[in-house]
Every structure is written in structure tokens, then in C-alpha cells.
Image (cartoon, rainbow, N blue to C red):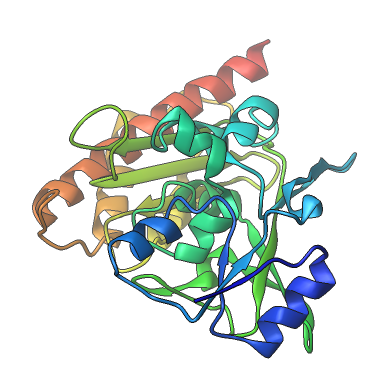
Amino acid sequence: MDFLRPTTWAEVLAAKADQPEALPVQGGTDVMVEINFDVRRPPALLDLTRIAELREWTVEDGGGCRVGAGVTYATVIEELGGALPGLAQASRTVGSPQIRNRGTVGGNLGAASPAGDSHPPLLAAGAEIEVESRDRGIRLIPAEEFYLGVKRSALLPDELIRAVRLRAAGGPQYFSKVGTRNAMVIAVCSFAIALHPEDGRVGTGVGSAAPTPLRALEAEEFLRGELDWDAPLDPALARRFGELCAGAASPIDDVRGTAGYRRHAIGVMARRTLTWAWNDHLGRRAA
């Protein structure tokens, strides 16, 4: 197995173009586990740890955020909790402190696991994935188009994830996760919600309840037509929202939970997170 150690982003793109089968590695929290257990044996590893720009993030005056692919969960928690509260909440549920210090949002995207904790808040926030290749340049992939199947993404063989782009939160955001314990656990299922008062809509993200992370589009459209942004939340509306979110899932039975339990849990989490977010929204208006 070759170990490639470029020192610039241009060198990274050249190496990936010349060896599309090279597997990128940054924090290594997923890649090294798979290699150690002989789940995969790539012909080359493409080390990204020397590329400082991947660890940078920016929040522009207009509210646009760009989070480099090498930004760790710990950095998201410590430095981006105000701008990206949903992603920060999800980051707090990832692994142990050691994993959060090494693991990255870009790595989670690259793995494209349905159970990845960062996926639901990125979907709910309307994120775009910035990818690049040497020969085609940069393109932006909407998060809902990025996931193609279990651990399969829209990345082309010579492309690499460079950053995630999304807007700073314009309203409350929440993330909820069900696991077999409170920490260091893969999600049985997860759910994220983001209120977008400026657009009069609600974004959703469902994790570990289908072959890919997904949005509950019917539930989002239902709320668009029913919400009064100045009034308390109708419990019946919250219940129907939960039902529609549960209906969007297509889970399976596995060692972590049954399909029926996952659907039920998605419905409960959707109803609860909507209620929490709505109470925050009304509180901000009253302040």
C-alpha cells in the first residue's frame, strides 16, 4: 500500500487524478478502522493532514458559511455552535472526545454512511458539498443529491470533498438521536430540524432509517402550508408532522433496532424537535 503525502491542495488533486483509487484520509476515524479489520485494502492512502486550508472555516457578513473538509467535530462544537447549532449538536453526539478531536465533517460525508451524525443537520440546513477535481474544477452538490446508496456518494473517482457550504442559522435548529446508550454509539436513527423563518419553511433530515440520509419532503411541504409563524404550535399539527416524517423513512431490521421501532422513533423525534424549535422561535420574537 502506497502512502501519498502531498503538501498543497494542487498536489492533492494531481495525486487523486493520477491514482483515482487512492483513498483520502484526514482524521482516520473511519478509514483506519476499516483497514485494521481488513474491510478494505486500497492500493494507496492519500494523506490530507498537511493541507491547512482544509481545516479553515469562514462566516461571511451575509450569513454564508464555508466549512473546510478537514474541520473537526471539536472545532464545530467550540467555534461554530452559534452559526451552525444543528451541526454542533450532532457533533456533540459523535464518539468520544478523542474521536471528536480527530474526526471531520468531510470524512463523515466521504464515508456516506446512512448513520452518519452530520448528515441530517446538513440536509435540514440546505447545505451544498463543494467538491473538486484537477480536470473538471469545482462543482457544488446539494446535500440531498450527494447520497446515492449505502456508503455511496455522488463523488466521481477523481473528485475530493473540499468544503461544505451553507447559510448561518436564521432560526432555531435541533438534532436528536436514538442509540443503545447516551454516548459513543452509532445511531439507531436520528433526526434534525431547521426553521427558516425568512423563507417561511422548515428543513428536515432523517438518518439511519433508509439506505441514504434523506429529507422528509412531504412533511416539509405540509408545514409550509399550515404554520402560522406568529402563533403557538398546534399539537395536532406537530403530530401530523411526526407521522409524515416517519412515513418518509424506509428502515430495515438489524442488530441495532427494528424497522418498526425506527419509524416510531423518527415520528417522536420529529414531533419533539419541532416543538423545541418552535418554542425557541416564539421566544426570540418575544425578546
